[in-house]
Length: 476
Image (cartoon, rainbow, N blue to C red; front, top):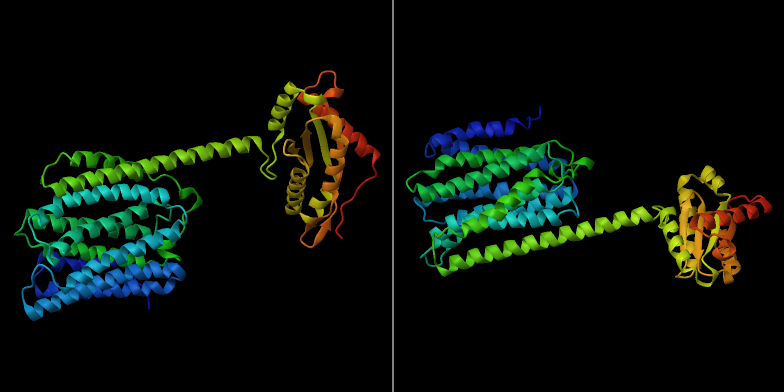
């Protein structure tokens, strides 16, 4: 059996929505709408077969939202058939309301799978935008409906539907603003959320502005939205909506800046609109402005902290060796120059170390073994010297230890040699590395500079290397 193309799903939904849009009370509309909706729900659940793990759960929650909305439509039709005209609310509203948190939960789980551990900034931005949208809905949709009304189920459901749309707006914005695959099923999902949001808002606004207008004409938009949801869930992509982003896709989305700018401008402007001067409405707007301000302050604090950490990381990278974490040649020269200005007790003293037999390790065991040797030697050197001493890696297999005075230079040299030449255990092998050590102090030079000290210690190291027998590295 040939698979139904994904692109055909919303097209079929649009065609089948025409009877509802043109004549919502006709028999044809009352038959095609639930039949088409049921087919879309089946398609959504069939798409679940290709998903695994938590992606299957996320897709299942979204398919579940479509299912409860369908059940709500069927229950409503059954109640109308049995009881005739219904009141402002019915048992079907419970199912319709339940679909919003189910869909939002599926979207949030999907986003967490797409961008694990990278949601904090996007979540704050979405919360800021959702605060403004919620304030708009409250001011123009909820407040006019509930003003002067006593608390009832009808009032509660009237208030929840707009805020259900805020929930979908927030979840949809999270999809757009977080890293993730933009093509394939995500396009259908974003389109579905957009059409759902626009459809719900249009229906609510039409009920307020045009009370005599039959909003059933707009139900075709909802069927189109459900078709787009089904297309997203039916899509053959391997991981579906939970696909991780490409390496170059984790950039600031341009819509993020636009939406945040509009959000920051909209709420202060909205505070000047006086639809209702009751205390509860003024208090609601004040609370929304305070929440938005708090979100912006938290977001600003996080951005500043990230910049500080980034600068610290760049500064550390500029002065330290990336493999061993020791200071590099540039930083060593700076510290040597500072130590030479002090010239305490005949110091400073430079110990120059060059590993013997390091090349055979690389040749026989690979570069990973060589990196292990260098990192382990660096660790041993740091553990051997005093806290006031400095350990640096010049490059390759050359290390330098900078100490204070020449009085214990020989003892330090012996400790360094013992630390380096102890066997190194690597993947079941005992690697033996030799070392040649030379040292020089500022007291022994006529015109001590950082370059002169390093050159003198280097020369002393090579004299020792020339006098010593050849050393080899071999596993035991």
